[in-house]
Image 1 (cartoon, helix red, strand yellow):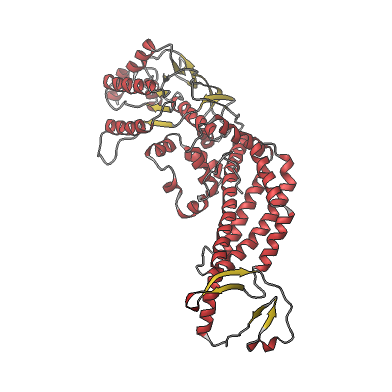
Image 2: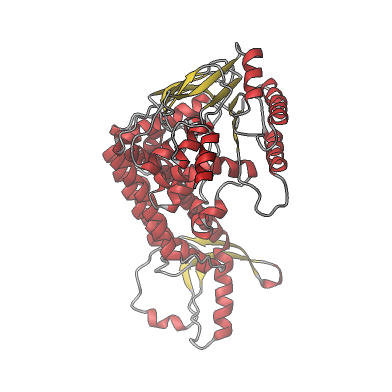
Length: 533
């Protein structure tokens, strides 16, 4: 039995998330590679993950892993989307299913205390106790399935409930209950064996108890006594309570007889525990999506299910895109933007400082990751080609350790991205290669962007390198898109982007006037004021 709520044809492999959530801090778990860590930092994914988790470390851990392992098959994305639609329509039932699996694991953990015995007899006793908790969970799962199955229509959920009804039917549950009663060994452990070399026992087999009634002559059992049973002779011998050597020998015989059975029972216990671990982890992702959806709805933000397309030909278009992390931080609605970049190998974004360019770039990256995770996206509508990977290269602060220059650090990060970049990957550049002068930075950007786009990877580039932007506009206007951050004549930013030719200025004087609270005057006038003071 496997839930398969994240993949239709294989397990998600997230059964270890509970242990990882308890054993490691969020910071040490997040993002295994440098490029993944950069993605988390640049897109501010922590804000999104925390909104999905709502304080639940397990939900946050699963959400992080799903977001950082995006799907590349549109059919698999649609499989998750169908399940998520059902979950959004039945949030209470999904949370109940998640809580049911979590409570089963918690009860099993309390029974075992995290201790796995080594002796076969102890393994059987431990497995019996754990399976007793499983039987209660099986019954609860069956009741849940019977009560809620008709409310779900997604193929993945229908398959899960049909499997529960088929595998956990009344006959199976009754059989498990009967076996658990037998595993208490109320009549003792019944074994058969053959006499092997050196008069040692061999070919031990665990036998089912004949469940005979107790004889009123049981007190005679301390003597050897022959008994006829189907033509075989049975002998009974009782050890003296202080015969420690005999007790150890008897325990050794019992362990040899129980060894094979104990191994099978332990594997069965781990298999069932693996099912509930997988069910808890996979439902945790959908619980995280419910948490995020509810929070965005509280803030009045629009969401939609995107249309995932094949990698070729490249397509990317949407309406009402916004940065959900910014929305979650400020707690009120933010400015959204539209995108029309079908067939564009390069999208260059220029314009006024603090005009919303970086926020728009983050919205592109987050929307792509959320789409390829099978989630809804922060937009009114969106469709895009899947990408084998999403990479970010945002500007960084100066190296405090002074071990390398800023340009060295930028090129080193770009080298790491180049090692992992594949055709169709999405590369987001934010004010990259600006650590040197205009001419050199533009030349570096020109060569890198050309190499990446020729390799078949679309690029979104927020830049103030006017030489680079103007050159690309004049040479590649037909195959590229050029967006401009709007600025009103009085310097006000609308945070809207429109198509337009790159401007020769970023309007830094607007920021200067805002920060130093001066009017619409030149630098010379400011110098004169300072001199007079």
